[in-house]
Each structure stands twice: as structure tokens, then as C-alpha cells.
Length: 400
Image 1 (cartoon, rainbow, N blue to C red):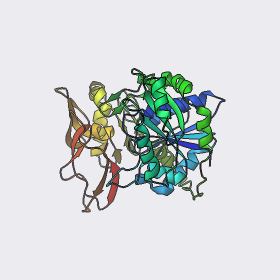
Image 2 (tube, rainbow, N blue to C red):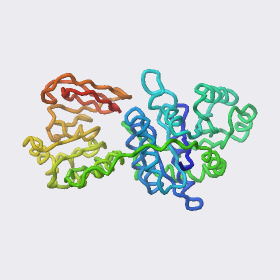
Image 3 (cartoon, one colour):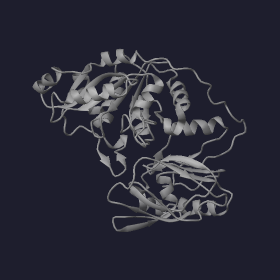
Image 4 (cartoon, rainbow, N blue to C red):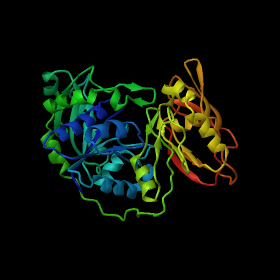
């Protein structure tokens, strides 16, 4: 078990993502450390773009709600092979996710892996009372080890001194408020790594104001977890599951999904729905992304009609999620305009003014006949009216 540290936040917007990325960058910079990045929860954006770009290793998601505890341990062990240290960015919630429980939370992952947590606290507009907040997080669940705190958006040296007088946990840094050096968001999440230089700019700020050596030391206190049997190599016959849409419109994928497909004998053939014709493959996989930002190109691409024809023939399995599911609907409507999409699913996607839902959904299918005969509504930042699946199974999925 390599040294590991979790960067958690007290709440969304406290600076956790920027600080986690800056720490990864600082560790990579010093001494040639090989850093394995992770992200807690079902987040597509931070891991494949920001983390992977910084560490030059595929970032992995650790999601006990979807993977189970064994899946978290197995993924951590396999992905950490050859790395010197692991940095895990927590999810947007620390101690609870669903139904008031901690299943799937950052705290849950900390307990599974036995690694310490550095808590990022937004100190803007407060001083001594911020330590009461730290005390609450440190004592609420005694099985979660708070190794220390990084105070973000500190106004001045005097402000830091006022906080220091009543510390409830070791302070690893006091980061001054840098108004224009944070990662901007859009309607469904953060800007992509190639759209912002915020983390690169923030690395120097973190190194100047945080004790990175002490953070490495606290990571060494990670408790070794039990070794579990990992998934076998799978089949030897290869299938051209190919059809993995990967371009500017579709690039939110879990690296573990690709690994599992390959271990089961699948050959992955990547293509761009923006510019390419549909490749000769046995199945199609459309991941998440921002198709709504590329409506014109997707509508004009030859791939759109080819996907429809392949699905209508009945022999082409098509799997889609998030933006990929949007692409399969009849159209995308936003800003008073409508762009035609594949039309595989008889539904329209409409961009709403605010989030419609955020969290996990347990879907229970009750009939054994064909999928998508009825009507159901799935809502997130994009609001899609999609048909109901009626296969006889229960599945869990994130709704963001």
C-alpha cells in the first residue's frame, strides 16, 4: 500500500479541486515523484482531464456506492502499481451522500483505505470560529482520520495568526485569497483541463504557503488494507466493441470501464462523431461530454444518420450515458435553437436554467419486455425526457 492522502472539503466551492490539483502538480515537480491521482464519486471531469493532464497517469474514480468496498480497494491497488504516492480528491460532500448516510462519501473512502484526510476550509469572513468547524469534522466520525487542515482564502498574515491561536488540527498551510486563480465552472461542471491554466498557476501559490513535506509525511501514515482477489483476465476471443466515441464532444469516461472491457477480450476502436464515419464494429459506446457545445458539427456529421441506421437494424448494441444519451435523442434544444441528433431514442433534450437533480438514483425495472416503451423523465443540468427501461433488474446510477 503506497502512501496516500485525501484532499476533502467542508463544502462545495471551498477550493478543494484547485488545491488537490496544485498538490498533485507540486508532488510531480519535486524529486520526480510518480503520483497516482484518484477522485471520490462519479465525477467524469476532474479525473480524465485535470488529474490525468497533471500526473500523466490515468485518474481513477473511487465510488463505494457504485463499486462496493472491494471494488474501491481493488481499483486503488491496481492503479497505484508503480506510483510513489496517491492523491485522492474528495467528492463535493465529505460525510454524507444519500439518505443521510456516509455510503459513497469521501469519509467512507477514507475508512476503506485507511488513509488520512487533509481538510480544506474556506476561511474567508471568519477567524477563530473556523476552528469550531474543524473540530466538528474531526470528531463527528472518530473512524475518519483528519490529518490536518489547509485554510483557503486567508485575507492576511494577521488573519492567519488569529486562526492559529485556537487550532483544532495541525495546519499545513494558509493560502491567500487569489480571486482570479480558481477553476471556472459551466452548467454541468468545471472547465476542461485544456480550457484553463488555473491549477498550473496555483501550484506556486500552494508551494509558497503550504508545507508539502509535512503532507508527504502524513500520507505515510496510510494503513495497509487487505489484499483482495482481483478480476481475472477474462476471455481470449476479441470483439471489436470499438465504437467508443472520443473527441471534444464526448470524453467523460471511467478508465476502469475501458480496462474491464479489454480484460474481457474487447478491442476498443475510438472514433469522433464530430468528423468520422461510423467504424466497422460490433457495438457502440457513447460516454459523457458536452454535445450541446458542438450541436452544429454533430448535426452535420455523417455519423449521426449512420448511428440511427445501425441501431435500427437491431443487431448493433448501443450503450450511452450522460452526454452520449443526449446524443441518441431526437434533438437538443438550447438558446432558442434546436439541433437534430441521432433519433435512436424518441425524446428531446432541453437545456434548463438550473440543475434539476443531483445525486444517485436507484432504478427498479419491473417487466421483462423490450426497453424504452414508456415515458420517464431524467433531469440534470440538461433536462432529457427519455423513455423508461423495463428490463427486470435493479441498477444504481449517478444522476448528475
